[in-house]
Amino acid sequence: MAAKKHETEVEGGGRFDAVLEHILIHYRWVFVLLLLPLSLVYDALLYVRTWVVFQLSSAPGKHALKVQRVADQVKQWKAEGGRVPMCTARPTWQTMSFRHSNYKKTFFTVNLNLVDILELSAEKRTVRVEPLVTMGQLTATLDPLGWTLPFVPELDDLTVGGLVMGTGVETSSHKYGLFQHICVAYELVLADGSTVQVTKESDPDLFYAVPWSYGTLGLLTAVEIQIVPALRFVKLQYDPVHSLDEAVAAINRLLALQDNNEFVEALMFSKDEGVVMTGNMVSCADWGKLNEIGRCYKPWFFEHVRTFLKTGPAVEYIPLRDYQHRHSRSLFWEIKEIIPFGNNVLFRYLFGWMTPPKVSLLKLTQTQAVKKLYENNHIIQDMLVPIETLKDAVLFFDKEVEVYPLWLCPFRLPSEPGMLQVPKDSMYVDIGVYGVPGKQGFQPKETTRRIEAFVAKAKGFQMLYADTYTTREEFRKMFNHSLYDKVRARLKCEKAFPEVYDKVCRKARD
Ligand SMILES: Cc1cc2nc3c(=O)[nH]c(=O)nc-3n(C[C@H](O)[C@H](O)[C@H](O)COP(=O)(O)OP(=O)(O)OC[C@H]3O[C@@H](n4cnc5c(N)ncnc54)[C@H](O)[C@@H]3O)c2cc1C
Ligand SMILES: NC(=O)C1=CN([C@@H]2O[C@H](COP(=O)(O)OP(=O)(O)OC[C@H]3O[C@@H](n4cnc5c(N)ncnc54)[C@H](OP(=O)(O)O)[C@@H]3O)[C@@H](O)[C@H]2O)C=CC1
Ligand SMILES: CC(C)=CCC[C@@H](C)[C@H]1CC[C@H]2C3=C(CC[C@]12C)[C@@]1(C)CC[C@H](O)C[C@@H]1CC3
Image (cartoon, rainbow, N blue to C red):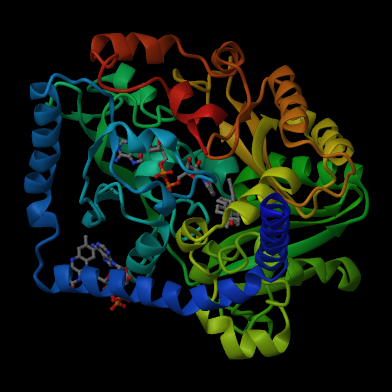
């Protein structure tokens, strides 16, 4: 009798769990709607904090003191015997990496209160910033001053530190390269507690080893980044293409005319249909063609782009900052999985001003059921492959996952020492795959393993904010570790920081 009662209770519990899981998966938007005002409050608090610091004019003046505090923590780690390696104390839910980093629970965590823009030099054409400065914060500060970054990686909350230690790519990357290629100096606190300023000239080994090192050579405390003059608008040309060959030919043609286009990007909506976009900054707009896509009641940018498949080529003038953050409001196209009716005109007018929900809050409040759902039915990957392999790569992704839109973003990869070594300056393309696979039989690990093998064979690279299932040997083959190993030995990093692989591999992330 008791056993029967227990069975019924277990059954009842199981049914309750199943119902709860169903609600959490299919009605996640209800919870997300609650997150929207929270996201606003969170942003407002950050804004007030920055404003107060500015009113006190204290941010640049206090930098040296803040760096000293970082160095003191490293010295404390040493004094305590350096039993476990160090990492930053930034909570893993706040980061833009797709998963949570397990190591944050056990490592010695170093607090970096480094959130300010330090100095703008019009003469040197650089801006010096602390590593927790975000892309949104930078464009809001620089654009009105008539300056901007050569390119602004989306999304708004990406940090300079994360983009240096990982990487960043955007639509001017075909001209300027990856985020590391627009950085001219790094300030780091090393494993021995010393602080160094590093440039190409002062210490080329360390300068080239820092990008893609994921905080495993030292703690970054400031970065000097190139800036370029900002004009008010981007004149954007939309050219629909109706076959993959047409798309590849159009991109190659545009790249050949490199200096004529500041921005080059394509969205493929199927393997045979897409829209290629090219743009330049301009100071005046044709007001009849002005489109302020950043306004909260405007359609999601990728849906707007899709309309040109039907209407044909067109030109629009977009305010610079709206262009730089065009995919932010729809989290590229991930938002359609989170708020399915978010592009409805009524929703946009009523609630658009509260969107997007903050990625960090989405991560923080993600339930096990949603995590499992993303684990088994979702792919988020960026693969960097030589432009010559673009057609094969799109066909391969189509065969394996069939996820659209597909983001195509060409970038220049100079032949330089470091993790991404190529024999000569080359043109690559970032293929961004974000969404629910249309292909039956998607198996996250097996499918990603096949994609990784394709990318390795094409002499490409995997972006490491997402899941990597490569083995240590495969990882070392994809990313050249010779300079990295040399610098790690020189700076005595072995006990102080783990290897990159141990921070980014699937085992290290939950
Ligand atoms: C090198 C430099 C030093 C500055 N020093 C000061 C100062 O001492 N006092 C002052 O009032 N303003 C300072 N500013 C900010 C500048 O005055 C404003 O960003 C700009 O004039 C736009 O003002 P706004 O009111 O239109 O923008 P707002 O909307 O007020 O600010 C733009 C956004 O950028 C953020 N932001 C701007 N600058 C920084 C920064 N340095 N660090 C972190 N977040 C930032 C703000 O939080 C806000 O979100 C500085 C800017 C730079 C580039
Ligand atoms: N448009 C684009 O190019 C996009 C890029 N991304 C990716 O997102 C990631 C950036 O996200 P974000 O949340 O900003 O960064 P994260 O906090 O995720 O940091 C990424 C890595 O950089 C290390 N790191 C960050 N700051 C420092 C520092 N000051 N000193 C030492 N190490 C540091 C972190 O180390 P630790 O683990 O110790 O904290 C971590 O290993 C990048 O990997 C980027 O490639 C994502 C979306 C779009
Ligand atoms: C342009 C490049 C190089 C990358 C863009 C990547 C983004 C599409 C992803 C980066 C972080 C991702 C997260 C999610 C969606 C896709 C990203 C924005 C979620 C919001 C998906 C829903 C989950 O519950 C939380 C995820 C957090 C990270």
